[in-house]
Length: 184
Image 1: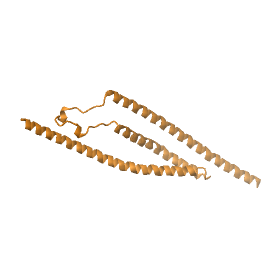
Image 2: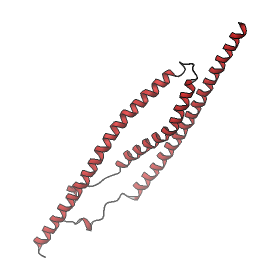
Image 3: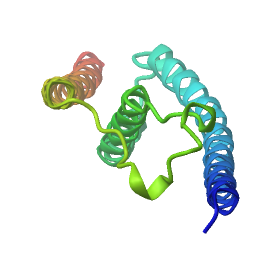
Image 4: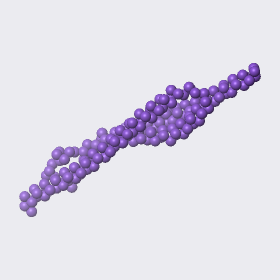
């Protein structure tokens, strides 16, 4: 092979590498756009749920009907299913956000064209940085777990207090109606 042939081969390899990188970047962009659409819909859903919860909070205690207790029981079973899913979704989004900060992929313009992609191994992060990120991840995961457990405990306490409130109201209503009939 001549020097010209070597140069053409390097240029072809470089172009193929650039095409591959463009295709990968396009796929990443498509995934990001699809994710953005999901996040926007999720944002609307979160806002609606927050509004609904705020409305229910305002109405707690305004009604003396026993149906409130049953409604609260339905809400509690809904929360038993919904809360873990919300926590998992939030954790996954946080993981995604923290992972994206670790990526340091070189741009195609920063790689020398004279070196073939097969002759250069991909760059890796230093072991100290990897260990630091692992430690950070472990601590954050533990913190999320602790807070999730605390939230679950508070939700259970709240449910128990609401149940006691409705039971006390029911007894109070029953006692006052019994006393009214005694005096008649």
